[in-house]
Length: 202
Image (cartoon, rainbow, N blue to C red):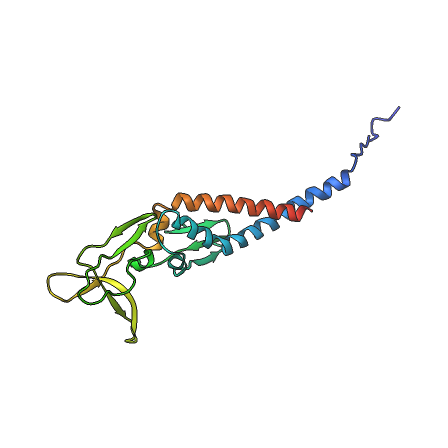
């Protein structure tokens, strides 16, 4: 008979291997999270662009021209920002001109030639600008000729005139494109995390 103070030891089959696997999963999970955050910083701008273009007629170059600021380590609330634990993308930008929305025509018509300016603000829906809108070359700060943009006079006089502007990238993110962007990021980050876990656990 065993004495009252004798310990009974039970050995689990392959217990050492299981312990190693659990330890690897714990440390591997941390590594997978870090890699996923890195993926977010490098790939999320593309997912944001795709989400915006699902609802707006903006060109990829139009979104890319307003590249986000990438922040790490903070989790403060941001306007027009997308974040995950450890990283965030913050978008800033002024109102865009119809030039970014597949504007037609892109060049000034010959003098005396009537023409209607239109743009695709909502994807698949072309909208005419006011009949009073006209195309002219914008001037850069250094005096050189800039891109051809649509202008509109403030009143009946020839001057002053203003460039016609629409919405900004941050506004598009906060409005129609918000749910699409959230879904794209959630789905793609989940895939990236699972992929990293599989690679680490091999």
